[in-house]
Image 1 (tube, rainbow, N blue to C red):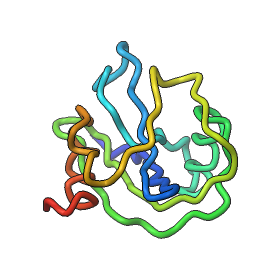
Image 2: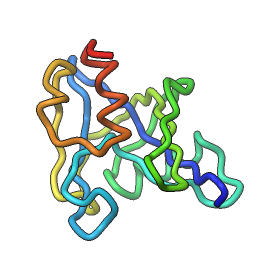
Image 3: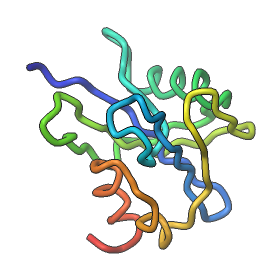
Image 4: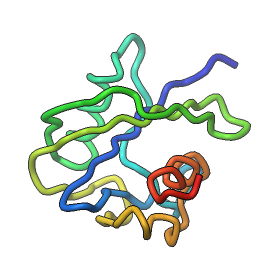
Length: 127
């Protein structure tokens, strides 16, 4: 099966990171993740993260940094691409069950989706 690129926005504000709880009916339902989603056909990483943040959190991406990490999501075709993103606006979700701003040291206290947990270990200094 061909890899499917998923973008994950690493959004930091006032020393905290934005994470969102996935809907129960989706893969990794009920677990927390960095916001984002699957790219459309021939969509760039930058355009995909802009679209996903606008659709899911009603915010605008002001600046998109380079790729921080790529993590394969277990036995799935998904490859999660983590990018630093600066946003404007206050996120409110119509897709996720909840959102939270969490200090790096506290990220691992949340039940994160597997790929997000691997990435968060680095943020929390627990490689």
